[in-house]
Image (cartoon, rainbow, N blue to C red; front, side, top):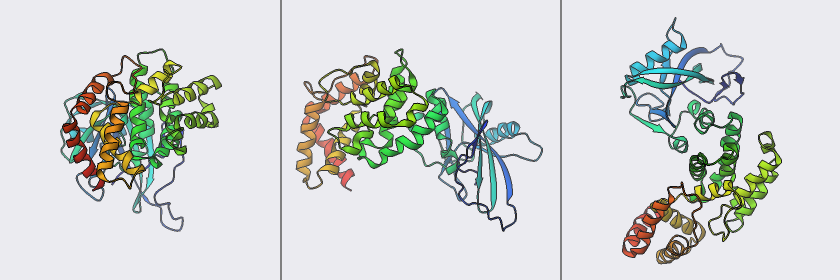
Length: 364
């Protein structure tokens, strides 16, 4: 077992809690030096799942121990060759992680890397995945590797490290207290889609990122006024002044206020249009499931037929031809997905079949 939460990033000393603080009354711990590769391909990062030892099934960035006399760079090249059968080109040193285990102190040097020769094939790990920004939290990371995720968000999205750390560690976790349709994964999906659409417009990417991260914080006050409450929360957040001037904060707040799908008016700004469109996340099966989840969370006393009628009514009111949903960004992939959802809504027997399956899964 070789990894733990982020301790020190390249060029900066960040203090983080340790799993097991050293006891000054005991002998100094043995120190183990390891390296890890953050292998990037376009907008994805390579992750591996351990197939052995006490941390079996946990996910990590590949790497291993530094042998006596080896440099960190040489050790990493060798470890990746032995574990994955590929040659890598090393980039910047991303971070140095310090972590105390009961038996030893671990120091892990982490480097960005790209594939230079070959495609990874697993010789020690049981599984592997290429993960984009919105997928980074889908796997069960070893604690040290999880501590690197805000840094990776910064690299993948092209935003300042300090802003990414604030949003990823302080803001987005607030979504964990909301309903199933608006958890942390929802915020990150909206961020991912908003940043993709922002590439087509002359907008500030930091503003788009912050607006997407904060757009649903107002759910703490209830769904009906959540968009307005999100704007209030954003304007009251003094931490945002570290990265944004007053006009930018107002732009972020307005984008959050304008994102609500039921609004009869178009968003006031292009930033608002991007956030509103990114929030749609039109994936037919996902929308149907979230509709069921919302009903179960807010109307628990309804019988199954009541939930079916509510699901049918909501889908027709919002998504069917003549529904109130409006698409605002022509570069959005939502148009084709909306057509597919409308085809399902028109075929009520098919929709009922999907409802039955999802309802059974949600109440199991």
